[in-house]
Amino acid sequence: MTARPLHFNAFIWPNGYHESAWRVVPDDVRGVLGLPYYAEIGRIAERGLMDSIFLADNIAIAEYRATYLPQTQFDPISVLSALAATTSRIGLIGTGSTTYSKPWELARRFATLDHLSGGRAGWNIVTTVTPLAAAAFGEPFHPDHADRYARAHEFVEVVQRVWDSWDDDAVIGDREHGVWADRGRLHDPRFHGQYYDSQGVLPFPRPPQGHPVLVQAGQSAAGIGLAARYADLVFSGPPSLAAAVAFRSSLHEQAAAAGRDPAHVLVLPALMVTLGGTEAEAQARAQRLEELASPDFRWQNALYTAGLEPDGFDPDAPLPARLWADGETAPSSRAELLFEAARARPQATLRELTDHTSGGAGQSHFVGTPEQLADHIIAWQDAGAVDGFTIMGSTLPYELATFADQVVPILQGRGRFRTEYTGRTLRDHLGLPHPAALLPR
Ligand SMILES: Cc1cc2nc3c(=O)[nH]c(=O)nc-3n(C[C@H](O)[C@H](O)[C@H](O)COP(=O)(O)O)c2cc1C
Image (cartoon, rainbow, N blue to C red; front, side, top):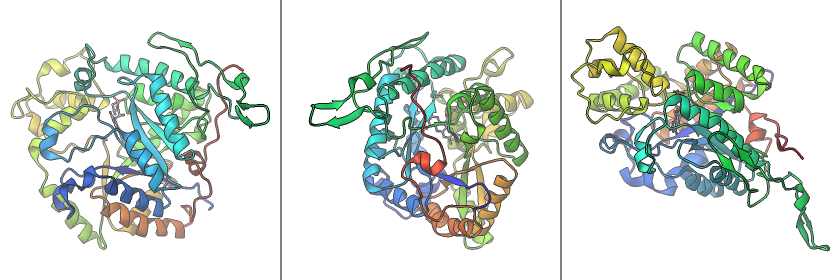
């Protein structure tokens, strides 16, 4: 391979990422609640030699979602642990909230997945947008955006310290002298910060990857700052090519300023794909999905994914000005986009403002043939906008199977993608080094 290798992450979502997917696929509607659904997606992604599969986590749902979308927000680590047994090479990335977890406990859960999978775990660090989570977790309030990100920095520090509490070579297995591990190679990850106090070594050895791969998907300045400091992989990115190039180079500059090697910060933005044997066929499939889309879903979803509780809003009235008045802080980067739209068109109804909003991850929608998708991916890589993509099949597993069986061979033929897995761990697939333990020895 002469060009930099591409990397692909498969986004798992019930029946596909398009909101109408569950209405067009022929499968049993309850199939998404069983392991075979996830196992099949894992098998297809691994057949396509993709780097990883990914599970999101929306820990508190607004009830409108139950009407419009299959609801399958299982605990990602449980699902991925099962998939560790049904796959052998592909990376397993799950989402975990820094606002609604305890760092030591989260460190243990992802380290468990890393051991069980032989070094294939990744953690998508989210700060949780929806305020509904506070009630679910019995918290008195949902911290604001700046506070959530300030906590997230400390949280990740604690997690990394816990992973580093055993040296890589601590287990010696000396049967003769009765020493399983060298106690001198354990280090208390003691941490006293503004938000967290934690101590106590991990109750098992360091994860095989040292640190499971860290992923970040926030688009705000604070989100990008967190990514620049810690993330190995970034799942967000703006929709236009020029903006995506600027985003990646600014992220790399910030990573370098934080003392990191920018080559070790890979950008795989979310891209929803609808594929067809001809362009007309792909367009017809996409159009069918759009025709079934509900305007009532769109406005509620735009609010929920921006961090606002949709109940109580009138879709046929303008967005209340108190939300976007000067001096008000937005609960997320998506809310800021919505507020900007309301400032530009204060008389527009909520329905009008959100009519064309895309799904919750701010993804673009590619519609075309496998050949056209391969051209698109290569053009974006060559422009310096991406290191690959997080592929969201608009329907699943169908779009993913077409990607694995038809797009991947084109990319391989052009020397852009691996023809076999050469390593065992997710870090190997991504070309990332094994991190040294950070704790003082
Ligand atoms: C591809 C992708 C996946 C995401 N997955 C999740 C998720 O599983 N759970 C979640 O709470 N937020 C998820 N998010 C949202 C972001 O992590 C982030 O919380 C959100 O964009 C708000 O932060 P910001 O204001 O920094 O953009 C995802 C975003 C993207 C682009």
